[in-house]
Amino acid sequence: MMSTRARSVLVTGGSRGIGAAVCLQAAKAGYRVAVNYTANAEAAEHIVGAIRAGGGDALAVRADVGSEADVLAMYDLIDHQFGSLDALVNNAGVVDVKSRVDEMSLERIERMFRINVTGSILCAREAVRRMSTRHGGKGGSIVNVSSVAAVLGGAGEYVDYAAAKGAIDSFTVGLSREVAAEGIRVNAVRPGITDTDIHASGGQPDRAERLKGFVPMQRPGTADEIAGAILHLLSDAASYTTGALLNVTGGR
Image (cartoon, rainbow, N blue to C red):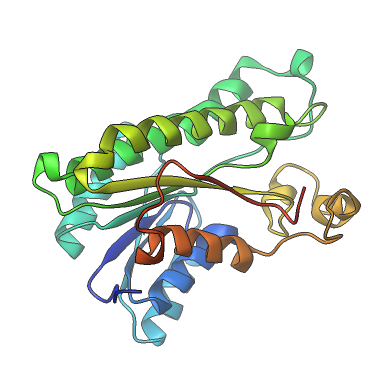
């Protein structure tokens, strides 16, 4: 693989879970890392501190990806600090409490799509404006974090979340074809059951352990395992891969 020493990457939702693992692995691969967060500045600064302690370059940047004003301000800061952007990992996302569709509020549904879908599209839009050869850029790579829920449907729990991730799959394929001749590769990783605190935010902190019996490997995945797949798709080792939806699910 070619050196990534001078490259920069924005990781949305980079202060915890899969996003934090991506930030740390990207830094080890030589990327300058923009660690996006929404509310937990302390967690984001902890990741930045760990990267800097290892000799890397990182900055924390607050933005609600569902807010266009926040996204524009975030990219302005990255432009100022890094000068260019070479990669984007659209990882920021939310779940909600277990619910049937006939019990979901409009507020819940709109929040689910604003952050998980609109936020990813807004961040990708700004990345393309900077990376595309059509706009004077040098190309780059985008990896969207989807979910196997897009295939399984999330019945009885998170149909809205599954639908949002289905939208991410479609967006990944469409955008990949739109910018393939402009030097940008666009792929997605679909994690399965992964041991992160996102389950706690949905009111089920024991969900990963409780559902491991449904996974052929009989265990949940780790954030580092998902991050490893993301780093592969970002890297030159995946130089002929675009529009791919990579399941990292333990066989589920």
